[in-house]
Amino acid sequence: MFVKICGLSTQEHVQAAVDAGADAVGFVFADSVRRIDPARAAAITNMVPDTIKKVAVMLHPANEEWQAVLHGFMPDVLQTDAGDFDNLDIPAGIECCPVIRDGNRVSGTYLFGDGNTVSGTYLYEGARSGVGETADWIAAAEVAKRGRMILAGGLGVDNVGEAIRTVRPFGVDVSSGVETAPGQKDSRLIRDFIKAAKAAGNSS
Image 1 (cartoon, rainbow, N blue to C red):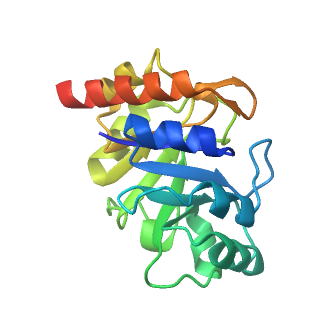
Image 2: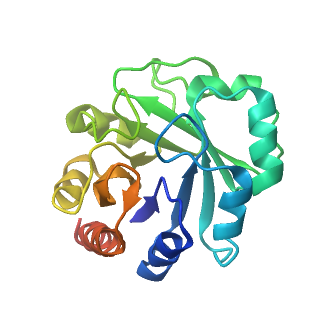
């Protein structure tokens, strides 16, 4: 089970995610209590091994904003809403992780309406990011059959196992579910979430 810990802002919590077996660490470059600047993100990830993906999380960025993140942070992956990619200059070495939201039908490469699969890995969540809003797991389970879905939205230690058994995603993503207050990550919750997600993935 692929596990991404998102909205990180301190080296302590990045290290906790790495030590606990996270497969990806995410950093928010959009309007949020978890927002971080590219230089800071680069500084707190200098010990992250190449086997763990560093993800830039954005929302409707202008190309200039994306270029600042690209050159200041050097992520492995860009995550933003599926419709945003058409307006961005993305080097061949950067993976694209489109965000598909409950009820969305998007055009172009990421079209689901005619039964097409999404290209590569994608993230599925509720209508809003970072607010603990649980996605529709029944709808997500249908979409998960069409590609490598990372399920997000309202996940935490107590429900990630049920979510994995219900949706059967490729991976899971958590942000507010491993916090003691908005934007305040907790190392113990990070460890417990990764342990629960990996256990559920191994048994499903």
